[in-house]
Image 1 (cartoon, one colour):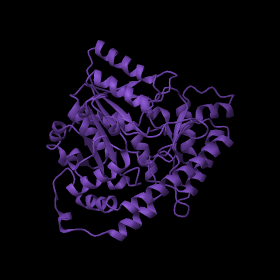
Image 2 (cartoon, rainbow, N blue to C red):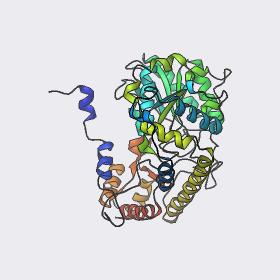
Image 3 (tube, rainbow, N blue to C red):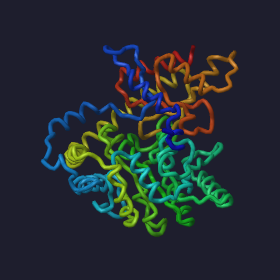
Image 4 (cartoon, rainbow, N blue to C red):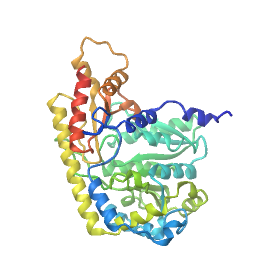
Length: 426
């Protein structure tokens, strides 16, 4: 039986296929020393032991854990717990309530749901380069929206001058008869590991207010900001949520939607707990009909409640997580500087180091005429049994940049960095 066109395209080999291969042959010091070391998957394993200790200590299930519970959009208890945490952490202009939140089985589901509600098939979402890979796929793969990458040339994609590139993209789309339904932001940024400055966010919100365009802000790393500003002598920006800026004199709050989840800040990718946060009642109501497709399990709902209702544990946990992330960032940047590998500065959030492997590779192999440096380096990395994601997966405007994830156990990070150096040198 023939597959649909969308299913046929989705079945083609992709980065997901490579990740699956890596996950099925993961390095372990004793059990699988010849396996792949993954420094490419956006997971934070630094706090897993601490997380599991709390889960196991508090684990008990009520009778309704065997049912649909409150419905398909998360229990009211969980929505209240998320609202409580984010009110304490994100400083929203208007305090969040349970009715502002729809819980999903992860943030990819949340992004897909929002794309479905905001855009008709073929309508566009602007997405600045480089971008988190799923942001390029979640609105389009099944919802049918068109993601339109925005180029910045040599302009910092998070700086105020980048707003002009977004405005140009809107105007160009209108000239071509392409309706722009929304803007996709990732703040803190994946893969750059930085926060958008307040003035950039305000400028973007004002721009989209003028055009009456929705803004989706993916803030899944909001609680993983581990330095006040930039690092390494490069001045960065402190984190500010769009929820703290969406005032009537900047943008209609009903045009701003935030996505948050437990995957990154709590190192809980496998829990599959995400949330859509919006002050647009018709939008949230529209999502109820399809909520069964993105419903989280009652078990995950209950475990998440036990975690998120414990303020003292959360504060201690997040503080220690930030300390460990900063420590591993220092380890990775010291390694890069020692071996003459250029990396982007100003990092103060999330798990990423944006590295110019292409420049380092050319310096080590001046005799080689490489036409596709990303492919050549990727081949060498995989031969060395280490996975680091190439910039081409993130729509990078310049070849040779790679995103390295440093939020892995220390021995794996150190061994993985050694393998990277071997791959670049051979």
